Image (cartoon, rainbow, N blue to C red; front, side, top):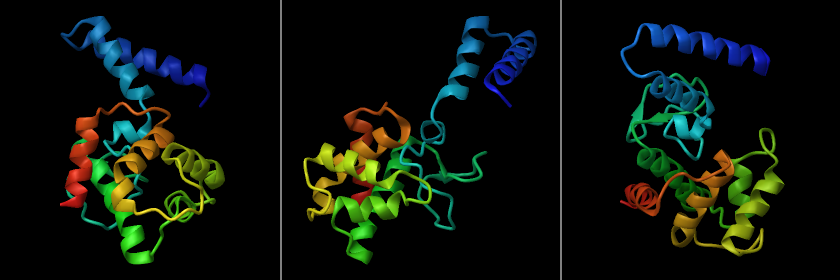
Amino acid sequence: MNKKTTLKAIILFAIFYLITSRNSVSEKIGEIVSDYTEPRGIRNNNPMNIRKSSNDWQGKIVGEDTAFETFVSPAYGIRAGAKTLLNYQKFYGLNTVNQIISRFAPASENNTNAYATHVADYLGVGLNEPITVKDRIYDLVTVIILHENGYNPYDTQVINSGVSLALA
C-alpha cells in the first residue's frame, strides 16, 4: 500500500469514526493521526524496541504488535530494555559499546556500526573502550531510545523511573 492509498484509508476511517462519535472533529483526527505517526516503540510503550519473547516482563501486556513487546507504561518498557543491557554485562561479559550494540541491534536487522558509533559518541567513549553498564545505564537508555525512535519524548523522571525499576 503506498502513502497516498494509506492516507485515503485513514481519512475515510476518520470520517466514518467522526460520524459515529460525539467528540469534536479536530480531537478525533488528532488522535487518529497521532496513533498512526508515532514510532512503534512509543506506541508500544517499548521505546527500546525489545522483541517479543517468552520472558514474563514486569508491566508486559498483550498488544497488537506481533514482533515487539507492549508494556503498560514507558517506564516498564524502559525497565525491560535496561534489564537487557545490564544482563548483557552480567551474564555475557559484554562491556564495550561495540559488543553491547552488536548484540542489542544485530547487523542482520540494523546498521550496527552506525548505531554503535552513535551510542559511543553520545557516551563520549571509544567503540571498544570498556564501560560499566550499571554506571552508564541512564545514558545508554537515553541514547538507545533516541536512536530507536528518532527522538526521545521522555523526561528525566520517566527514564529514571524505568532505570530504577531495572536496578531494583
